[in-house]
Amino acid sequence: MATAVYPGSFDPVTRGHLDIIKRAAKINDRLIVAVLINSAKNPLFTVEERVALLRECCKDIPNVTVESFDGLTVEFAKKRHASVMVRGLRAVTDFENEIQLAQTNHALMPGIETMFLATSIKWSYLSSTIVKEAARYGSNISKFVTPNVEDGHPRQSGAAPGGRKDVLIPFIMQKGLRAF
Ligand code: ADP
Image (tube, rainbow, N blue to C red):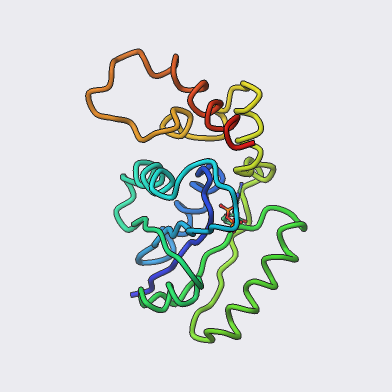
């Protein structure tokens, strides 16, 4: 039973991340999407918000779970008995950083292999940073993220019908303006 961990900041989760999640879930028995609690970065969404958004995005993929973690990714993977670490590769610029990370992780924990999935061409330009920049200037970000992320919060059951679109961009913009 191969368990894989897909770690990242997911601030916020994009359609590029979701593409990797769906593909990684097909080739591993179990996939844990792990949100890094990284106090060094200045995140737009809290860890709890990022986990909740991811959970909603992944609710229809039965072998995917989402949790947060602190500390070394390989230690987290070991605790969950994972043998695979999933990472997405977009461009050459990702490669340098990712290969170093994979080699460091292998040196620390030889039992865990990093699996790189090449991004689908459709999402090769997409990053959480781009989404935040676009939202900040009021652009339509529906191409980049799912509706719950556009909203900026997990969909509440019983929320006022038709109200979503009106609050959605301002919410993420508000957050963006506070963070920059
Ligand atoms: P980190 O801060 O660890 O880079 P991210 O949330 O930015 O966290 O990314 C997590 C992983 O997802 C990384 O391996 C990254 O390369 C990958 N990733 C991010 N965006 C995309 C995308 N559009 N297509 C494929 N992989 C992606």
